[in-house]
Length: 506
Ligand SMILES: *[C@@H]1O[C@H](CO)[C@@H](O)[C@H](O)[C@H]1NC(C)=O
Ligand SMILES: *[C@@H]1O[C@H](CO)[C@@H](O)[C@H](O)[C@H]1NC(C)=O
Ligand SMILES: *[C@@H]1O[C@H](CO)[C@@H](O)[C@H](O)[C@H]1NC(C)=O
Ligand SMILES: *[C@@H]1O[C@H](CO)[C@@H](O)[C@H](O)[C@H]1NC(C)=O
Ligand SMILES: *[C@@H]1O[C@H](CO)[C@@H](O)[C@H](O)[C@H]1NC(C)=O
Ligand SMILES: *[C@@H]1O[C@H](CO)[C@@H](O)[C@H](O)[C@H]1NC(C)=O
Figure (cartoon, rainbow, N blue to C red):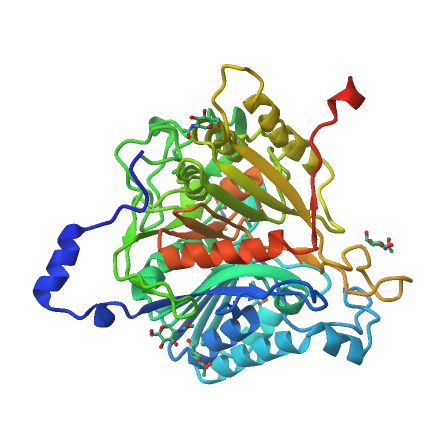
């Protein structure tokens, strides 16, 4: 495996010296980690230099002069405590103020103001949720020809799945990628993690291609452009776009997307032997580790049929980040959901990709893996079976006196206080609105590389659902993301998951 980060481009560095370019002039691209921290978590250590999601969303709108492109699963920026169909129902004005609902209103107003200054806003979204579905984006578009809103249904193309990527691109240079939805709750009642780029046209240009591909998809006739493939990788028949590499070459159509995956040889689709990397010098004003050297970064995309050029599929971004750990190093993984299978697909698919990568590095690299999974009201019941199965790797690791296996996996639930007291206020005992009080961030960080994503760690998110990750070997981003994880891991809000009790089951 090639070392990571590859201290790239000695040649490029020499070139820059030759050109006499001062490093600061080249390094205009700046990145900050972005968080939402739910209210009422007084014992959570705050990591300095991390921005707040509500600020970043307002800035992306506020700074836009020409374009704003947004990928959104749904819209709920405006709280609805008076709507009996809303999870916010029954809470008082002062409750809502205490919950921080005003931040959602501020983001919505910033978008409205951008729309009024004739910024060209394009929105690609899923169909939204009850009670009002995508009414907020429709209201932004109403009577404003500069605002365009389209709905893209992944079920029509992949049989199931949703547009789940959360991405903002402003003026083709400022970008947000992360876990936060366009929902007031994502700003102050759900724990989120993302990254904000300012003045980064190279990163914006790449993610813009993905946006354009989704936009194009929304204009195409899915009936005419999908086929049933025998998916050899996952041993299931399923609906895919007709240009999918899951179809045999003679069954495939030419991709209607202007930019599609362009690889002559695909070994074990969708992973690529040499995925495309971006050589962007990134400054991190929120965390001061001097990084004058070049480190590789990447973007990865799901589903594989929506990737392009030689950019890797999102699953590979995660797997390779886990495997990027050095011998004896630590991998930290944070997710809301974790399952070693599919969740929404008609046929249930077994999906060991991430747990296998974890077991591999525990065995051969003596790595420690810390996995933080959310425990909340809408917890998926069979999660714990998969977590215990992964913990069993520790037993296997030391199962023979001939093993030289010194790694381990540790798993904790993240329990945001109040998680079991959520729902409409009319039900006694509910202290917070529904769909709140949960750790929703999705990222992994080894000692050499960080991957900040939008997907939960379940098969569907990588094969039938829109998702994006930004990854980098930039040591400043790596170290600050480790610190964000450690603040959570070491907080009183985590509970260890217990290993399988073999005595009891015997
Ligand atoms: C533009 O973005 C910067 C941070 O990148 C922020 O400080 C500033 O307030 C934003 N401006 C507006 C008008 O939102
Ligand atoms: C887009 O906005 C218009 C104007 O409000 C609305 O009529 C339309 O239903 C919306 N389309 C979608 C897909 O939400
Ligand atoms: C979509 O394609 C199908 C199959 O080719 C065709 O029957 C249908 O009329 C098309 N729909 C539209 C809206 O063009
Ligand atoms: C980072 O370093 C620069 C220059 O040394 C300094 O001006 C700035 O205040 C520092 N920022 C932080 C967040 O420590
Ligand atoms: C891993 O740890 C074991 C037991 O402590 C040791 O024997 C082995 O040499 C280590 N392997 C590596 C690759 O560090
Ligand atoms: C919620 O969980 C906490 C901590 O486990 C517990 O003390 C409390 O009684 C629970 N509340 C309800 C309504 O179940």
